[in-house]
Length: 214
Length: 79
Image 1 (cartoon, rainbow over the protein chains, first blue to last red):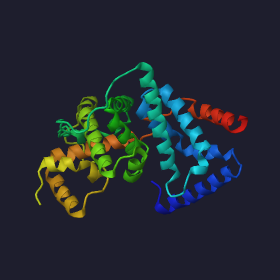
Image 2: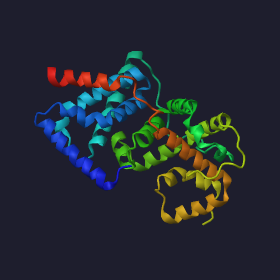
Image 3: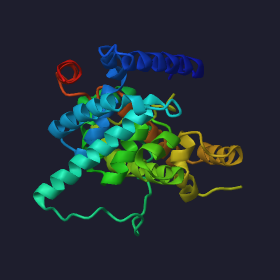
Image 4: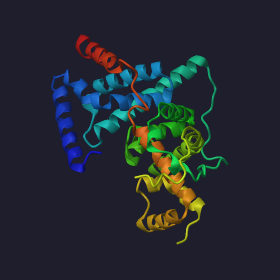
Protein backbone atom coordinates (compact mmCIF):
# COMPACT_ATOMS: atom_id res chain seq x y z
CA UNK A 1 0.00 0.00 0.00
CA UNK A 2 1.26 3.39 -0.90
CA UNK A 3 0.97 6.15 1.65
CA UNK A 4 -1.14 9.16 0.75
CA UNK A 5 2.01 11.19 0.40
CA UNK A 6 3.67 8.59 -1.81
CA UNK A 7 0.61 8.42 -3.98
CA UNK A 8 0.49 12.18 -4.39
CA UNK A 9 4.14 12.20 -5.38
CA UNK A 10 3.56 9.38 -7.87
CA UNK A 11 0.66 11.34 -9.34
CA UNK A 12 2.83 14.42 -9.74
CA UNK A 13 5.48 12.34 -11.50
CA UNK A 14 2.79 10.92 -13.72
CA UNK A 15 1.47 14.36 -14.70
CA UNK A 16 5.02 15.40 -15.55
CA UNK A 17 5.49 12.25 -17.60
CA UNK A 18 2.23 12.84 -19.47
CA UNK A 19 3.23 16.42 -20.24
CA UNK A 20 6.55 15.24 -21.62
CA UNK A 21 4.95 12.56 -23.80
CA UNK A 22 2.56 15.16 -25.18
CA UNK A 23 5.46 17.51 -25.80
CA UNK A 24 7.02 14.91 -28.07
CA UNK A 25 8.99 12.51 -25.90
CA UNK A 26 6.92 9.60 -27.20
CA UNK A 27 9.20 6.90 -25.87
CA UNK A 28 8.26 7.86 -22.32
CA UNK A 29 4.74 6.58 -22.92
CA UNK A 30 5.83 3.03 -22.25
CA UNK A 31 7.25 4.11 -18.92
CA UNK A 32 3.94 5.78 -18.13
CA UNK A 33 1.80 2.70 -18.79
CA UNK A 34 4.22 0.03 -17.62
CA UNK A 35 2.96 0.02 -13.98
CA UNK A 36 -0.57 -0.56 -15.29
CA UNK A 37 -0.09 -3.19 -17.98
CA UNK A 38 -1.13 -6.00 -15.65
CA UNK A 39 -4.19 -4.05 -14.53
CA UNK A 40 -5.24 -3.39 -18.12
CA UNK A 41 -4.74 -7.02 -19.08
CA UNK A 42 -6.72 -8.35 -16.10
CA UNK A 43 -9.53 -5.91 -16.75
CA UNK A 44 -9.74 -7.10 -20.35
CA UNK A 45 -9.52 -10.72 -19.24
CA UNK A 46 -12.43 -10.25 -16.83
CA UNK A 47 -14.56 -9.12 -19.76
CA UNK A 48 -13.48 -11.22 -22.74
CA UNK A 49 -12.48 -14.30 -20.71
CA UNK A 50 -9.71 -15.66 -22.89
CA UNK A 51 -6.02 -14.92 -22.98
CA UNK A 52 -5.62 -14.15 -26.67
CA UNK A 53 -8.47 -11.66 -26.87
CA UNK A 54 -7.48 -10.15 -23.54
CA UNK A 55 -3.93 -9.53 -24.77
CA UNK A 56 -5.12 -8.07 -28.09
CA UNK A 57 -7.63 -5.91 -26.27
CA UNK A 58 -5.08 -4.77 -23.72
CA UNK A 59 -2.72 -3.69 -26.49
CA UNK A 60 -5.55 -1.90 -28.31
CA UNK A 61 -6.64 -0.15 -25.12
CA UNK A 62 -3.11 1.06 -24.41
CA UNK A 63 -2.67 2.25 -27.99
CA UNK A 64 -6.00 4.08 -27.68
CA UNK A 65 -4.82 5.69 -24.49
CA UNK A 66 -1.78 6.93 -26.34
CA UNK A 67 -3.85 8.34 -29.19
CA UNK A 68 -6.18 10.14 -26.82
CA UNK A 69 -3.66 11.15 -24.22
CA UNK A 70 -4.19 14.85 -24.92
CA UNK A 71 -7.82 14.38 -23.80
CA UNK A 72 -6.77 13.15 -20.39
CA UNK A 73 -7.73 15.66 -17.74
CA UNK A 74 -5.95 15.67 -14.43
CA UNK A 75 -9.24 15.59 -12.49
CA UNK A 76 -9.30 11.78 -12.64
CA UNK A 77 -6.37 9.54 -11.85
CA UNK A 78 -4.52 8.26 -14.89
CA UNK A 79 -5.09 4.68 -13.73
CA UNK A 80 -8.86 5.23 -13.56
CA UNK A 81 -8.90 6.84 -16.98
CA UNK A 82 -6.91 3.93 -18.39
CA UNK A 83 -9.25 1.41 -16.75
CA UNK A 84 -12.25 3.13 -18.32
CA UNK A 85 -10.61 2.77 -21.72
CA UNK A 86 -9.84 -0.88 -20.98
CA UNK A 87 -13.45 -1.60 -19.94
CA UNK A 88 -14.78 0.05 -23.11
CA UNK A 89 -12.32 -1.84 -25.26
CA UNK A 90 -13.35 -5.12 -23.63
CA UNK A 91 -17.03 -4.46 -24.13
CA UNK A 92 -16.55 -3.48 -27.75
CA UNK A 93 -14.55 -6.60 -28.36
CA UNK A 94 -17.28 -8.66 -26.77
CA UNK A 95 -19.97 -6.99 -28.87
CA UNK A 96 -18.00 -7.62 -32.04
CA UNK A 97 -17.48 -11.26 -31.09
CA UNK A 98 -21.14 -11.69 -30.22
CA UNK A 99 -22.26 -10.12 -33.44
CA UNK A 100 -19.90 -12.40 -35.33
CA UNK A 101 -21.38 -15.42 -33.64
CA UNK A 102 -24.89 -13.99 -33.84
CA UNK A 103 -25.12 -14.98 -30.28
CA UNK A 104 -28.28 -13.96 -28.50
CA UNK A 105 -27.20 -14.60 -24.95
CA UNK A 106 -28.77 -12.14 -22.59
CA UNK A 107 -27.01 -10.55 -19.67
CA UNK A 108 -28.04 -12.10 -16.39
CA UNK A 109 -30.74 -10.13 -14.63
CA UNK A 110 -29.75 -8.24 -11.54
CA UNK A 111 -31.17 -9.37 -8.24
CA UNK A 112 -33.34 -12.45 -8.53
CA UNK A 113 -34.24 -14.76 -5.72
CA UNK A 114 -30.78 -16.12 -5.29
CA UNK A 115 -29.35 -15.82 -1.82
CA UNK A 116 -25.89 -14.46 -1.36
CA UNK A 117 -25.02 -16.15 1.84
CA UNK A 118 -21.57 -17.46 2.63
CA UNK A 119 -20.69 -21.08 3.32
CA UNK A 120 -20.69 -21.61 7.05
CA UNK A 121 -17.65 -23.50 8.22
CA UNK A 122 -16.09 -23.77 11.58
CA UNK A 123 -12.66 -25.18 10.92
CA UNK A 124 -11.24 -22.69 8.42
CA UNK A 125 -8.68 -21.53 10.90
CA UNK A 126 -7.21 -24.99 11.01
CA UNK A 127 -5.91 -24.34 7.52
CA UNK A 128 -2.26 -23.48 7.85
CA UNK A 129 -1.00 -20.44 6.04
CA UNK A 130 1.23 -22.65 3.92
CA UNK A 131 -1.90 -24.06 2.33
CA UNK A 132 -2.42 -20.68 0.73
CA UNK A 133 0.95 -21.16 -0.92
CA UNK A 134 -0.29 -24.12 -2.83
CA UNK A 135 -0.52 -23.93 -6.57
CA UNK A 136 -3.81 -25.76 -6.81
CA UNK A 137 -5.48 -23.21 -4.59
CA UNK A 138 -4.49 -20.43 -6.92
CA UNK A 139 -5.81 -22.52 -9.80
CA UNK A 140 -9.13 -23.06 -8.00
CA UNK A 141 -9.42 -19.36 -7.33
CA UNK A 142 -8.79 -18.55 -10.99
CA UNK A 143 -11.49 -21.01 -12.00
CA UNK A 144 -13.92 -19.64 -9.44
CA UNK A 145 -13.39 -16.05 -10.60
CA UNK A 146 -13.75 -17.16 -14.21
CA UNK A 147 -17.06 -18.83 -13.32
CA UNK A 148 -18.58 -15.73 -11.74
CA UNK A 149 -21.43 -14.11 -13.70
CA UNK A 150 -20.01 -11.34 -15.90
CA UNK A 151 -21.01 -8.29 -13.90
CA UNK A 152 -19.68 -9.77 -10.68
CA UNK A 153 -16.38 -10.82 -12.26
CA UNK A 154 -15.84 -7.30 -13.61
CA UNK A 155 -16.45 -5.67 -10.26
CA UNK A 156 -14.31 -8.18 -8.41
CA UNK A 157 -11.45 -7.68 -10.88
CA UNK A 158 -11.51 -3.91 -10.68
CA UNK A 159 -11.81 -3.79 -6.89
CA UNK A 160 -9.83 -6.75 -5.63
CA UNK A 161 -7.30 -7.34 -8.41
CA UNK A 162 -6.78 -3.94 -9.94
CA UNK A 163 -7.29 -2.39 -6.51
CA UNK A 164 -9.39 0.53 -7.67
CA UNK A 165 -11.46 2.13 -4.93
CA UNK A 166 -15.25 2.16 -4.94
CA UNK A 167 -15.56 5.58 -6.60
CA UNK A 168 -13.02 4.71 -9.30
CA UNK A 169 -14.71 1.37 -9.99
CA UNK A 170 -18.09 3.09 -10.26
CA UNK A 171 -16.66 5.65 -12.68
CA UNK A 172 -14.92 3.03 -14.83
CA UNK A 173 -18.05 0.89 -15.13
CA UNK A 174 -20.56 3.72 -15.34
CA UNK A 175 -22.63 2.56 -12.36
CA UNK A 176 -23.24 4.07 -8.94
CA UNK A 177 -21.12 3.40 -5.89
CA UNK A 178 -23.81 1.54 -4.02
CA UNK A 179 -24.15 -0.87 -6.93
CA UNK A 180 -20.39 -1.46 -6.78
CA UNK A 181 -20.60 -2.34 -3.08
CA UNK A 182 -23.60 -4.63 -3.51
CA UNK A 183 -22.11 -6.51 -6.44
CA UNK A 184 -18.70 -6.76 -4.82
CA UNK A 185 -20.27 -8.24 -1.71
CA UNK A 186 -22.13 -10.81 -3.78
CA UNK A 187 -19.03 -11.65 -5.80
CA UNK A 188 -16.95 -12.20 -2.68
CA UNK A 189 -19.65 -14.31 -1.06
CA UNK A 190 -19.99 -16.43 -4.20
CA UNK A 191 -16.25 -17.04 -4.17
CA UNK A 192 -16.25 -17.80 -0.48
CA UNK A 193 -19.10 -20.26 -0.93
CA UNK A 194 -17.38 -22.03 -3.78
CA UNK A 195 -13.87 -22.08 -2.35
CA UNK A 196 -14.52 -22.83 1.31
CA UNK A 197 -15.24 -26.54 0.80
CA UNK A 198 -12.29 -26.93 -1.56
CA UNK A 199 -9.98 -25.34 0.95
CA UNK A 200 -11.30 -27.65 3.60
CA UNK A 201 -10.42 -30.74 1.60
CA UNK A 202 -7.03 -29.56 0.34
CA UNK A 203 -5.78 -28.67 3.78
CA UNK A 204 -4.90 -31.33 6.32
CA UNK A 205 -6.89 -31.12 9.53
CA UNK A 206 -4.85 -29.75 12.39
CA UNK A 207 -7.35 -29.48 15.13
CA UNK A 208 -6.59 -27.21 18.00
CA UNK A 209 -3.40 -25.98 16.44
CA UNK A 210 -4.45 -23.01 14.44
CA UNK A 211 -5.19 -19.71 16.14
CA UNK A 212 -6.62 -16.53 14.72
CA UNK A 213 -5.24 -15.37 11.41
CA UNK A 214 -2.98 -12.35 11.77
CA UNK B 1 -27.50 -3.60 19.10
CA UNK B 2 -27.35 -7.36 19.13
CA UNK B 3 -26.79 -8.72 15.65
CA UNK B 4 -27.65 -12.12 14.28
CA UNK B 5 -25.36 -14.04 11.90
CA UNK B 6 -27.35 -13.17 8.80
CA UNK B 7 -26.98 -9.50 9.61
CA UNK B 8 -23.22 -9.88 10.03
CA UNK B 9 -22.90 -11.73 6.70
CA UNK B 10 -24.65 -8.87 4.92
CA UNK B 11 -21.91 -6.52 6.09
CA UNK B 12 -18.83 -8.72 5.75
CA UNK B 13 -17.63 -7.13 2.53
CA UNK B 14 -18.05 -3.57 3.82
CA UNK B 15 -16.49 -4.63 7.12
CA UNK B 16 -13.39 -5.92 5.31
CA UNK B 17 -13.22 -2.65 3.37
CA UNK B 18 -13.58 -0.69 6.62
CA UNK B 19 -16.60 1.11 5.23
CA UNK B 20 -19.15 0.38 7.96
CA UNK B 21 -20.09 3.11 10.45
CA UNK B 22 -18.23 2.93 13.78
CA UNK B 23 -21.24 1.83 15.80
CA UNK B 24 -22.10 -1.03 13.47
CA UNK B 25 -18.45 -1.99 13.36
CA UNK B 26 -18.41 -2.32 17.14
CA UNK B 27 -21.59 -4.44 17.04
CA UNK B 28 -20.04 -6.70 14.40
CA UNK B 29 -16.87 -7.08 16.42
CA UNK B 30 -18.83 -8.03 19.53
CA UNK B 31 -20.65 -10.66 17.51
CA UNK B 32 -17.41 -11.98 15.98
CA UNK B 33 -15.86 -12.49 19.39
CA UNK B 34 -18.59 -14.90 20.30
CA UNK B 35 -19.43 -16.49 16.96
CA UNK B 36 -17.05 -19.08 15.53
CA UNK B 37 -19.01 -19.41 12.30
CA UNK B 38 -18.98 -15.74 11.44
CA UNK B 39 -15.30 -15.37 12.35
CA UNK B 40 -14.47 -18.29 10.09
CA UNK B 41 -16.45 -16.77 7.24
CA UNK B 42 -14.66 -13.49 7.74
CA UNK B 43 -11.24 -15.19 7.81
CA UNK B 44 -11.99 -17.29 4.76
CA UNK B 45 -13.17 -14.30 2.77
CA UNK B 46 -10.06 -12.38 3.79
CA UNK B 47 -7.87 -15.30 2.77
CA UNK B 48 -9.48 -15.34 -0.65
CA UNK B 49 -8.65 -11.66 -1.02
CA UNK B 50 -5.07 -12.26 0.11
CA UNK B 51 -4.78 -15.00 -2.47
CA UNK B 52 -6.35 -12.77 -5.13
CA UNK B 53 -3.85 -10.00 -4.46
CA UNK B 54 -0.96 -12.48 -4.79
CA UNK B 55 0.68 -11.70 -8.14
CA UNK B 56 1.15 -15.40 -8.80
CA UNK B 57 -2.59 -16.05 -8.87
CA UNK B 58 -3.44 -13.88 -11.84
CA UNK B 59 -0.39 -13.52 -14.04
CA UNK B 60 0.37 -11.79 -17.28
CA UNK B 61 0.92 -14.21 -20.17
CA UNK B 62 4.60 -14.96 -20.77
CA UNK B 63 6.10 -12.37 -23.13
CA UNK B 64 3.19 -9.95 -22.71
CA UNK B 65 5.36 -6.94 -21.85
CA UNK B 66 7.72 -7.56 -24.72
CA UNK B 67 4.90 -7.86 -27.26
CA UNK B 68 3.21 -4.75 -25.89
CA UNK B 69 6.45 -2.83 -26.14
CA UNK B 70 6.91 -3.94 -29.75
CA UNK B 71 3.37 -2.93 -30.64
CA UNK B 72 3.88 0.48 -29.07
CA UNK B 73 7.15 0.94 -30.93
CA UNK B 74 5.27 0.36 -34.16
CA UNK B 75 2.38 2.66 -33.20
CA UNK B 76 4.49 5.46 -31.85
CA UNK B 77 7.32 5.60 -34.34
CA UNK B 78 6.10 4.15 -37.61
CA UNK B 79 2.82 5.99 -37.97
